[in-house]
Length: 235
Ligand SMILES: [Zn+2]
Image (cartoon, rainbow, N blue to C red; front, side):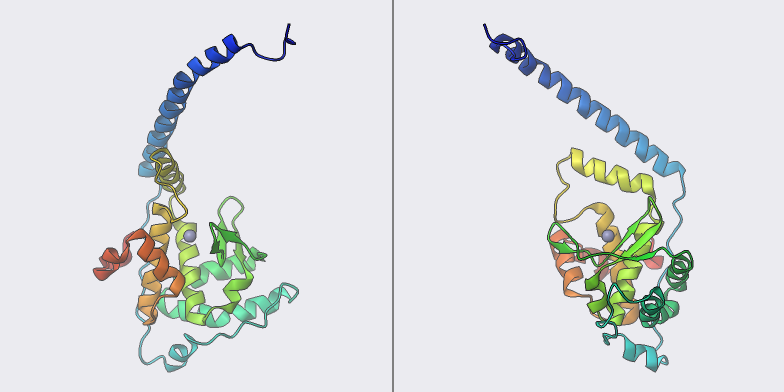
């Protein structure tokens, strides 16, 4: 006689028969949750994001800053004041093309919410910066500080998109892509929109986008959206 804790072949067959029903329940609950999230997204805040203004040709000093890399010296052990100082050139660029974004970063700094993130990757993509909306913390990684000032401004714009995006849409999109099997290391609809917003930052700075952004656009076939950018950047 086998010990009672070991299921008999007969009970294993029963468990096998229960699985299709359970899987169906999970799928039904998943789609019900998706519908609820989409409904919540529709009835909650869906403000338009602030549009970018092209950097004026008269701003010669700022134009010069775009391609400079001024922060490779920065270390985690440096003071918060040194980190804040290091952000100033990219914030000046943002102040010229989209002041709402520089105001957001300034507010985060006032609340001591700009934090150092150790080197991190997601699906082999380097994490330059990330906004954690659950705790309203903003992380900048070592790779962020190796970027040109214009690239930094564009990355900050990308994270500003995540800060402003409707949370219900974000979770609904991720769940929807998960249920349809489309969620992959190549990105998601939420990331597509953040990358498009980042692309508009590059356009306003009159800069070619970084190789990372271009490679994301190629993988997700997003070029068709930027050939004719929507007016007002209504994402
Ligand atoms: Zn993102």
